[in-house]
Image (cartoon, rainbow, N blue to C red; front, top):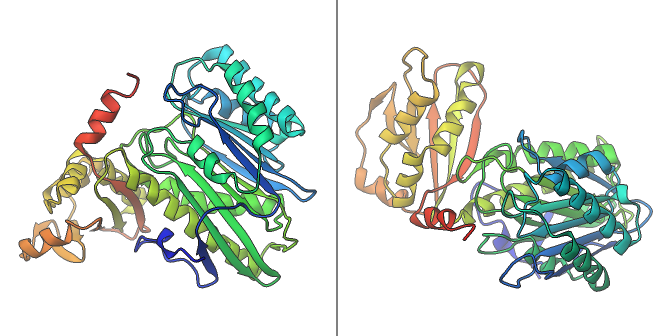
Length: 415
């Protein structure tokens, strides 16, 4: 059954050879489960297990670029084979970050318990955590939970898995696609979490992707790296960089449909993965801990990387984000963000357009229909285009607004 609603943003156009399905099952060669092990006081699901089986399993992984790395990131990076991850074990309710040597021990214990529950070597296991920073992880609960999850693994367990990785998320974020390749159709599924502490260069987010296509380790790594840069590296909720971000791509190869390097199928698969991750990234900022609207800022021009600096400054400006929340087309807030981003530089002549309406050119205001523009910025998605002098490449960042609810959630998060 087709479900076109997954690709619901005008900023993501899926290729013609991709069909979206209602999520409900995993690709061939995968099993998953989600259980409650007691890490969340609410009693909700808080531990997920994803397993890839077969002789052709390959994988790829990307981590946060934060200088403060959570224990599971360090353990996975240092003790797991990035190209041969058969199992992903992930808990919510506790980030196991800034927990010292004991936290490292618990992450390693989690890796060992997942390996035992699934009958694989420890270096075939990636571990991930998400939740409050600075609180010790109760490894006993995690070990018991992993044993329970191992008994509940099934091809339709991805729904429970997706719920088990949520923290402040208001909704689970998952997708199921069919991709038509020259050797036949393959399946691509994904589950993600994230709503706050979101910043370009990753977020407080986790994403797990599965396919039954057969990819080499090198191809999987190449495609994941390229698509992550166009998706999760391009979003911001609050400009805060997380300690735990991880994205994992697992390929079971169970369909026997190969994606050869430098082939048309590699292009097709890569474009499908790109659309998938970009839409999931938008779902994260759409969740945005109280978000009402999301926006895209595109900066054209700007020498020596100025466009990238300006795009991020606009996306992370509390003034711009508050105006977005209120549906206020106050472009002066964008102008101040541009100036702040290029502080110390010579004065520049910028252009600004909002939803296709030119409001400023060469650094000066242009007459426009303010009432009509106010209607345009009251929609769910708003686009800002900024022009700078110079011939720099286009830079884009997607971001959410700043709401009263965001402040409430983060003021009360640990209590």
